[in-house]
Length: 258
Ligand SMILES: [Fe+2]
Image (cartoon, rainbow, N blue to C red; front, side, top):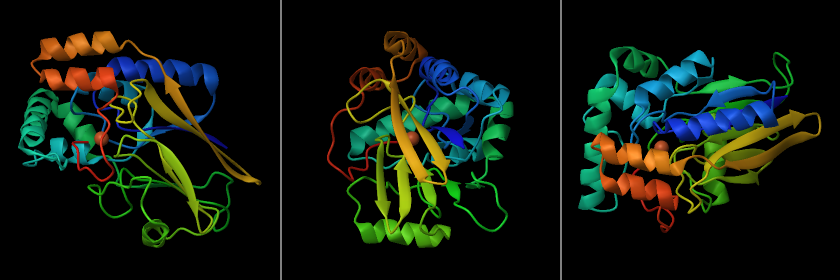
Protein backbone atom coordinates (compact mmCIF):
# COMPACT_ATOMS: atom_id res chain seq x y z
CA UNK A 1 0.00 0.00 0.00
CA UNK A 2 1.27 3.41 -0.96
CA UNK A 3 0.44 6.63 0.89
CA UNK A 4 1.11 10.30 0.28
CA UNK A 5 1.27 12.36 3.47
CA UNK A 6 0.89 16.13 3.39
CA UNK A 7 1.16 18.33 6.45
CA UNK A 8 1.21 21.98 7.46
CA UNK A 9 0.00 23.47 4.19
CA UNK A 10 -0.72 26.68 6.12
CA UNK A 11 -2.87 28.36 3.48
CA UNK A 12 -0.13 28.28 0.85
CA UNK A 13 -2.06 27.44 -2.32
CA UNK A 14 0.84 27.60 -4.84
CA UNK A 15 2.80 25.14 -2.71
CA UNK A 16 -0.16 22.76 -2.35
CA UNK A 17 -0.93 22.85 -6.07
CA UNK A 18 2.69 22.11 -6.94
CA UNK A 19 2.68 19.16 -4.55
CA UNK A 20 -0.59 17.78 -5.94
CA UNK A 21 0.83 18.00 -9.49
CA UNK A 22 3.96 16.18 -8.36
CA UNK A 23 1.91 13.52 -6.59
CA UNK A 24 -0.15 12.91 -9.75
CA UNK A 25 3.06 12.21 -11.69
CA UNK A 26 5.14 10.46 -9.05
CA UNK A 27 2.55 8.43 -7.19
CA UNK A 28 -0.63 7.98 -9.22
CA UNK A 29 -3.15 5.89 -7.36
CA UNK A 30 -1.57 6.44 -3.95
CA UNK A 31 -3.88 7.17 -1.02
CA UNK A 32 -3.42 10.84 -0.09
CA UNK A 33 -3.90 12.12 3.48
CA UNK A 34 -3.18 15.41 5.21
CA UNK A 35 -1.91 15.83 8.77
CA UNK A 36 -3.43 19.18 9.64
CA UNK A 37 -2.66 22.87 9.87
CA UNK A 38 -4.34 23.61 6.56
CA UNK A 39 -4.61 27.33 7.38
CA UNK A 40 -2.65 30.19 8.95
CA UNK A 41 0.27 32.43 7.90
CA UNK A 42 -0.49 32.62 4.15
CA UNK A 43 -3.44 34.20 2.33
CA UNK A 44 -5.38 31.26 0.86
CA UNK A 45 -7.22 29.50 3.74
CA UNK A 46 -10.49 28.95 1.86
CA UNK A 47 -8.82 27.94 -1.38
CA UNK A 48 -6.67 25.36 0.40
CA UNK A 49 -9.70 23.94 2.22
CA UNK A 50 -11.54 23.74 -1.12
CA UNK A 51 -8.64 21.87 -2.76
CA UNK A 52 -8.54 19.37 0.10
CA UNK A 53 -12.31 18.91 0.05
CA UNK A 54 -12.65 18.62 -3.71
CA UNK A 55 -9.69 16.25 -3.84
CA UNK A 56 -11.33 13.97 -1.30
CA UNK A 57 -8.21 14.15 0.86
CA UNK A 58 -8.98 12.91 4.35
CA UNK A 59 -6.90 14.04 7.29
CA UNK A 60 -6.63 15.18 10.89
CA UNK A 61 -7.02 18.49 12.72
CA UNK A 62 -3.97 20.60 13.43
CA UNK A 63 -3.85 23.09 16.26
CA UNK A 64 -4.49 25.90 13.78
CA UNK A 65 -7.51 24.17 12.23
CA UNK A 66 -9.36 23.51 15.46
CA UNK A 67 -8.64 26.92 16.99
CA UNK A 68 -9.77 28.81 13.87
CA UNK A 69 -12.85 26.63 13.61
CA UNK A 70 -13.90 27.31 17.19
CA UNK A 71 -12.77 30.94 17.43
CA UNK A 72 -10.40 30.09 20.25
CA UNK A 73 -8.32 32.90 21.74
CA UNK A 74 -4.99 31.68 20.32
CA UNK A 75 -3.71 29.33 17.60
CA UNK A 76 -1.75 27.33 20.15
CA UNK A 77 1.57 28.16 18.52
CA UNK A 78 4.49 28.76 20.86
CA UNK A 79 6.68 31.82 20.38
CA UNK A 80 10.30 32.51 21.24
CA UNK A 81 9.85 36.16 22.06
CA UNK A 82 7.24 38.95 22.22
CA UNK A 83 7.84 39.94 18.58
CA UNK A 84 7.05 36.42 17.37
CA UNK A 85 4.05 36.28 19.65
CA UNK A 86 2.72 39.51 18.15
CA UNK A 87 3.15 38.09 14.64
CA UNK A 88 1.38 34.89 15.65
CA UNK A 89 -1.58 36.92 16.90
CA UNK A 90 -1.73 38.91 13.65
CA UNK A 91 -1.76 35.71 11.59
CA UNK A 92 -4.45 34.16 13.77
CA UNK A 93 -6.72 37.22 13.70
CA UNK A 94 -6.24 37.60 9.93
CA UNK A 95 -7.06 33.94 9.32
CA UNK A 96 -10.08 33.87 11.65
CA UNK A 97 -11.52 36.95 9.93
CA UNK A 98 -11.11 35.60 6.39
CA UNK A 99 -11.87 31.91 6.78
CA UNK A 100 -15.44 31.32 5.64
CA UNK A 101 -18.05 29.69 7.84
CA UNK A 102 -18.11 26.73 5.45
CA UNK A 103 -14.34 26.33 5.74
CA UNK A 104 -14.52 26.62 9.54
CA UNK A 105 -17.19 23.92 9.62
CA UNK A 106 -14.92 21.66 7.60
CA UNK A 107 -11.90 22.37 9.82
CA UNK A 108 -13.95 21.84 12.98
CA UNK A 109 -15.09 18.44 11.74
CA UNK A 110 -11.61 17.03 11.21
CA UNK A 111 -10.77 14.08 13.48
CA UNK A 112 -7.88 14.22 15.95
CA UNK A 113 -6.39 10.98 14.66
CA UNK A 114 -6.80 8.45 11.87
CA UNK A 115 -5.77 4.79 11.94
CA UNK A 116 -5.06 2.92 8.72
CA UNK A 117 -4.52 -0.80 8.12
CA UNK A 118 -2.41 -0.84 4.96
CA UNK A 119 -2.22 -4.60 4.60
CA UNK A 120 -5.85 -5.19 5.45
CA UNK A 121 -6.66 -7.49 8.31
CA UNK A 122 -9.15 -6.83 11.04
CA UNK A 123 -7.03 -7.53 14.09
CA UNK A 124 -3.55 -8.12 12.71
CA UNK A 125 -1.05 -6.38 10.51
CA UNK A 126 0.68 -3.04 10.93
CA UNK A 127 -1.22 0.12 11.80
CA UNK A 128 -0.41 3.53 10.34
CA UNK A 129 -1.59 6.25 12.73
CA UNK A 130 -1.91 9.87 11.59
CA UNK A 131 -1.92 12.78 14.07
CA UNK A 132 -0.84 16.41 13.81
CA UNK A 133 1.69 16.56 16.68
CA UNK A 134 1.31 13.68 19.16
CA UNK A 135 -1.41 11.10 19.86
CA UNK A 136 -2.68 13.08 22.87
CA UNK A 137 -1.59 16.71 22.47
CA UNK A 138 -1.48 18.92 19.38
CA UNK A 139 0.86 21.51 20.89
CA UNK A 140 3.97 19.39 21.54
CA UNK A 141 6.85 19.69 19.08
CA UNK A 142 8.26 16.23 18.34
CA UNK A 143 11.68 17.14 17.01
CA UNK A 144 14.28 14.73 15.66
CA UNK A 145 16.48 15.03 18.73
CA UNK A 146 13.87 13.69 21.16
CA UNK A 147 15.26 10.77 23.19
CA UNK A 148 14.21 7.22 22.41
CA UNK A 149 12.27 7.04 25.68
CA UNK A 150 10.13 10.01 24.66
CA UNK A 151 9.24 8.40 21.33
CA UNK A 152 8.60 5.05 23.01
CA UNK A 153 6.08 6.80 25.32
CA UNK A 154 4.29 8.21 22.27
CA UNK A 155 3.98 4.70 20.88
CA UNK A 156 2.46 3.50 24.15
CA UNK A 157 0.04 6.46 24.23
CA UNK A 158 -1.05 5.60 20.69
CA UNK A 159 -1.30 1.86 21.41
CA UNK A 160 1.31 1.07 18.77
CA UNK A 161 3.58 -1.97 18.56
CA UNK A 162 6.66 -3.00 16.62
CA UNK A 163 6.03 -2.68 12.88
CA UNK A 164 3.48 0.11 13.31
CA UNK A 165 3.95 3.64 12.00
CA UNK A 166 3.22 6.97 13.69
CA UNK A 167 3.04 9.93 11.28
CA UNK A 168 2.88 13.57 12.35
CA UNK A 169 3.96 17.08 11.38
CA UNK A 170 3.76 20.34 13.39
CA UNK A 171 7.50 21.07 13.57
CA UNK A 172 7.84 21.72 9.81
CA UNK A 173 11.09 19.73 9.71
CA UNK A 174 11.05 16.26 8.11
CA UNK A 175 12.69 13.24 9.73
CA UNK A 176 12.30 9.48 10.24
CA UNK A 177 13.46 7.29 13.10
CA UNK A 178 12.70 3.76 14.29
CA UNK A 179 12.47 3.06 18.03
CA UNK A 180 11.55 -0.38 19.37
CA UNK A 181 10.42 -1.32 15.87
CA UNK A 182 7.94 1.57 15.61
CA UNK A 183 8.46 4.04 12.77
CA UNK A 184 8.21 7.72 13.66
CA UNK A 185 7.77 9.92 10.59
CA UNK A 186 7.66 13.68 10.66
CA UNK A 187 6.29 14.71 7.29
CA UNK A 188 7.74 18.22 7.24
CA UNK A 189 5.64 21.02 5.75
CA UNK A 190 4.05 21.70 2.38
CA UNK A 191 3.55 25.42 2.80
CA UNK A 192 5.90 26.70 5.49
CA UNK A 193 9.12 24.64 5.76
CA UNK A 194 11.48 25.52 8.60
CA UNK A 195 14.56 23.50 7.65
CA UNK A 196 16.13 26.16 5.43
CA UNK A 197 14.84 24.59 2.21
CA UNK A 198 11.98 26.70 0.80
CA UNK A 199 10.66 23.90 -1.43
CA UNK A 200 7.36 22.28 -0.47
CA UNK A 201 7.82 18.96 1.33
CA UNK A 202 5.78 15.79 1.58
CA UNK A 203 6.24 12.07 2.25
CA UNK A 204 5.72 8.90 0.27
CA UNK A 205 5.15 5.93 2.58
CA UNK A 206 5.02 2.36 1.32
CA UNK A 207 4.13 -0.66 3.39
CA UNK A 208 4.31 -4.24 2.34
CA UNK A 209 5.18 -7.55 3.96
CA UNK A 210 8.82 -6.43 4.15
CA UNK A 211 7.94 -3.39 6.25
CA UNK A 212 7.80 0.37 5.78
CA UNK A 213 9.83 2.51 3.42
CA UNK A 214 9.84 6.31 3.56
CA UNK A 215 10.72 8.83 0.85
CA UNK A 216 10.96 12.54 1.58
CA UNK A 217 10.04 14.56 -1.49
CA UNK A 218 10.74 18.26 -2.08
CA UNK A 219 8.98 20.21 -4.81
CA UNK A 220 9.83 23.58 -6.32
CA UNK A 221 6.91 25.98 -6.44
CA UNK A 222 6.33 29.61 -7.32
CA UNK A 223 7.58 31.08 -4.05
CA UNK A 224 7.64 34.60 -5.45
CA UNK A 225 3.92 34.53 -6.23
CA UNK A 226 3.27 33.44 -2.67
CA UNK A 227 5.59 36.17 -1.39
CA UNK A 228 3.81 38.85 -3.43
CA UNK A 229 0.38 37.70 -2.35
CA UNK A 230 1.43 37.69 1.30
CA UNK A 231 2.71 41.25 0.84
CA UNK A 232 -0.58 42.41 -0.71
CA UNK A 233 -2.77 40.59 1.77
CA UNK A 234 -1.95 42.67 4.79
CA UNK A 235 -0.13 39.78 6.47
CA UNK A 236 3.26 40.71 8.00
CA UNK A 237 6.26 41.00 5.67
CA UNK A 238 8.10 38.58 7.96
CA UNK A 239 5.88 35.77 6.66
CA UNK A 240 6.94 36.46 3.07
CA UNK A 241 10.62 36.43 4.04
CA UNK A 242 10.03 33.18 5.92
CA UNK A 243 8.71 31.49 2.76
CA UNK A 244 11.71 32.70 0.75
CA UNK A 245 14.26 31.40 3.23
CA UNK A 246 12.49 28.19 4.15
CA UNK A 247 12.47 29.38 7.74
CA UNK A 248 15.38 30.83 9.60
CA UNK A 249 17.67 28.18 11.11
CA UNK A 250 16.70 27.81 14.74
CA UNK A 251 17.88 25.62 17.64
CA UNK A 252 15.87 22.52 18.51
CA UNK A 253 12.83 22.98 20.77
CA UNK A 254 12.74 26.68 19.98
CA UNK A 255 9.02 27.08 20.34
CA UNK A 256 8.89 29.09 17.14
CA UNK A 257 5.42 29.69 15.71
CA UNK A 258 4.06 26.70 13.80
FE1 LIG B 1 2.10 24.07 11.45
